Every structure is written in structure tokens, then in C-alpha cells.
Image (cartoon, rainbow, N blue to C red; front, side):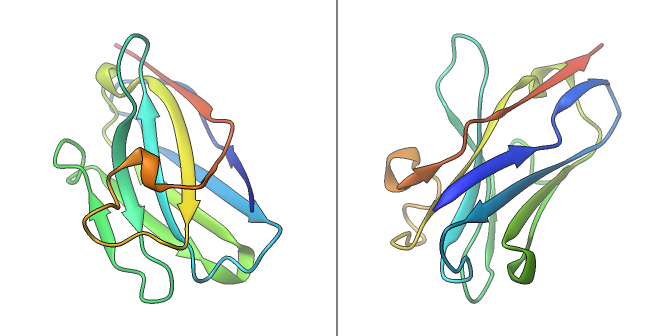
Length: 125
């Protein structure tokens, strides 16, 4: 599975962005897909995840009121809508996918087998 993120950019605090993660190579439906982010000097951090097939969603407590993850299996794409962006949301955002994720590992970066190259989100104050 190849993953390509898009939708990042420079925005102002309070703005919204929708990031996309497009997959190619295999049927996307059974894959759990998650968004992670990594700010300079910090560890990679879970943002949101969506299970394959059933589509259950998971969110980081730090963003859950501002972020919505969704998927369009027909387009092999997963989206994350981010609202009320803050300067501390500045990071490179990565999507990741795997077929072997369970509820206890959805937030664990090392549980994912496939990663995109990342898209930079910069939020100015």
C-alpha cells in the first residue's frame, strides 16, 4: 500500500484544514488508517484513527473536540478535518495504515506497516 498525504499548508490560528490520505496498491477497506503528527524536537504523536470495515474512530484527547476523521473507501482516501487550529498544532502530519491494528494498538506508531511521506501544517498566531 502506498500512501500520499495532501492538504497541508500555512494557516492562521482559528482556521480549518482538511488533510487527505490517498492509498493505492490494494483495496483500502480492510485497513485501519491513522493520522500522526510530529513537531520539531518532539516524538510522533497520535491524532486520530479509523478502523477498516466497521469504521470505528479514535481520537487523541488533545484534539478530539476539534478533529474529525472519516474515510471514503470508494476513493481509497481517509480525511482528517481539523478546526480551530492552534500554533501548537504545527507539525508534519503523517498517515499510516495497517490491517493488524486492534483497539489497544491504534495509537501506537510502531503498530503500523505503511506510512506516507507527510504533509506540513504550519499555524501562525
